[in-house]
Image (cartoon, rainbow, N blue to C red; front, side, top):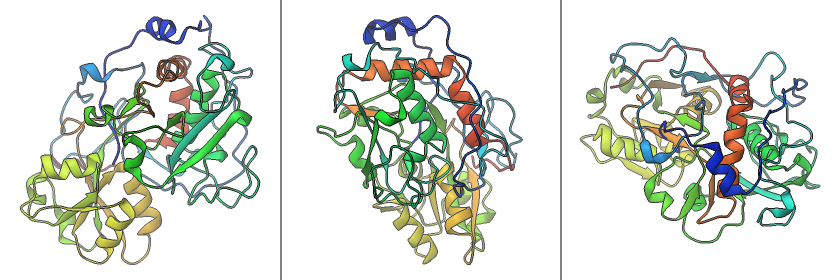
Length: 375
C-alpha cells in the first residue's frame, strides 16, 4: 500500500516564512455541513490510525504505539490507537469549509500553480472508499460536463477521508471548490516517478519513503496507516496468530508498495512473494487460489472484504500489523522542489490546528470492530 510514521512537530512560523504569507491569529469556528446527498458505498472497516495532532517531519520517525499488544490481543479502539473506517457518519459531518477561504499563504494569484488562479489535484482511478466517496454516475458541482470516467468514487463529490481532506487543504490555501480541477492517475507508482507532474499535488494513500522522496516532494503527513493481511475466509491461513505462522504461505502484494516491503522485509515467507501490477491483479490471484493472502493497507482491505469479496468466496481480514513493525505516514505528493510544498505544509498545519482534519477523520474513519494484531 501506501502509508507512514509519526514525527516531530514542525514550527508553523517556519512554514509561514517559507510561504511568505501570514496565518490568521484566530482560525474560524467550523459550522456543520448538511447531510451528504450522495450515498457512497463505503465499507465497514477495522483499524487505521487517526491523523496526527500536529505537523510532523520524516526527520525524526518514531513509533506511535506506546506498547505492543500480544499476538492474540484485540484492539478495543483506545485513544490514539488503531481505529477503523466504517460506512460513514449517521449524523451530518461536523466540519465545513470556511468561507472565505483561509488563504494562509497569501493571495492565490501569488502561488505558482499549474494553472494560474486554479489548483490541479490528482488521485488514483479507481478511487476507493473510505478514502474517497461519491457516485461516479452523478454530475457533481464544478465537475466538467459529461463526467471524467471516474470509477467506484468521484473526487468532485468532496466525500471520503482523502477527498474531504484535499478540499480542506485547498481551502486553507485559498482555493474554493470551483477553482479545483482533478486529473486521474491509473498507475500507482507513476505519481512518485521521476519527472515533471501535471498536478499541483496528488493524494492516494502514498507512504512517505526516502527513496520516493528522491524523485518528488512530500508534504507533512496528514494520516498514519497500518498494513493488514487479507485472505479467503475458508483458507487455513485465517488461523494464523503471528508472523511466524505466515511464513509457510504464499503471499502477494502490489508492486512499489509498502505492503510488498512488509512481506519481503518483515514476514520473510519461505516462498518468494508474488508481485502484481496493482491491487486488482493481486485480488484476482487470491480469488483464483494462486496465493494464500495479500498484504494491503487496512482501508483497502476493508473495501476488498466488504465490497469485492462480499459473496462467494468471502474475504476475511486475518489481522493487522503493528506500526512498530512498519510505520506508514501518508503525505501529499508534489513535483520535486515544488514552490507549493511549503504552502501545502502550512495548509495542513492550519487544518490540524483548527480541528478540521480531526473532524474529517471522525466523519469518515471511526472506531468499530475488534481485530487481532499479527506480530
